[in-house]
Amino acid sequence: MRKLVIPGTTLETSRFIFGTSSLFQTGTSRARRRLLDAAVDHGFEHFDTAPYYGFGIAERELAPVLKANPTVKVTTKVGIYPPGDGDAAPVSVWLRKAGGKLLPSLARPHMSFDLNRAKLSLEQSLRRLGREHIDLYMLHEPQVDRVYGPEWLEWLESLRARGQIGYFGLATTCERLRPFLEAGSALVQVAQVADSIEGREADVLTACRRPLQITYGYVSRGRAAGDKTEVSELLRRAAARNVYGPIIVSTRRLERIGQYARVTEIPG
Image (tube, rainbow, N blue to C red; front, side):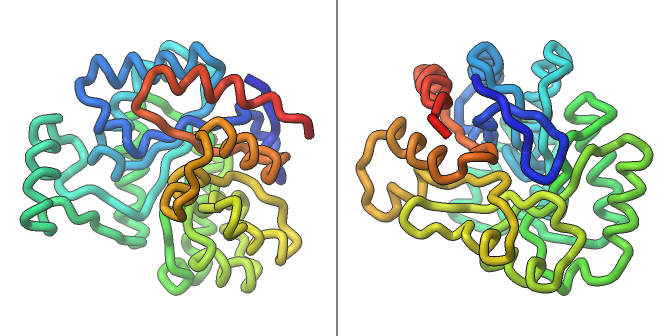
């Protein structure tokens, strides 16, 4: 898979980043590991995860893959937390998710930008991932008033200085990103934002003279709008739109992995 450097950083990554938001739905731990290994085999060199994905299981399932492939990069996040402690057994996660359909509070995430909670979350993510370093550490859908003031920036910069993280930024929607951009917030080293071919939501960045960095959501948003274009063609259009930044893709189907890899050679 073709590589690129995320604009505004020195972080080299694969053209597509493999997202793990739906990894838990793959089924068994063996099936999840098979999917992750296939992604590496087909040239994915970067995984995107978060404590909330699979209620901590996505981070834990990545640990052996990252250990076996130390050059593979990882993004994780802070600010949205799973119910429970994030270390529940898979059967407990299944029960909580199933019960959440009847009683939403069982599966409802907890959002907090308390800095002490964030420091604990970092320790937990590093332990679950089995690493001492996170390549890209993202604030997960923050509101600008929740992280106002110097404390968050000072903490993130201190993590960089200690080598615990590489870069930091925001993983969010264009609506939540806009106030940070308009304020010139230094928290937006890297922007990971939902985008679509028709809506071009990520143009909130170009309007502020910022390049598209990491984008995602092209297939899901296309389907929601009734676009029945083949997935490979949608991703070709996405790559033609975000020429210089990586795109997050995800799947629970092994056969899709190779299809994604073949899409990546897009004339730029």
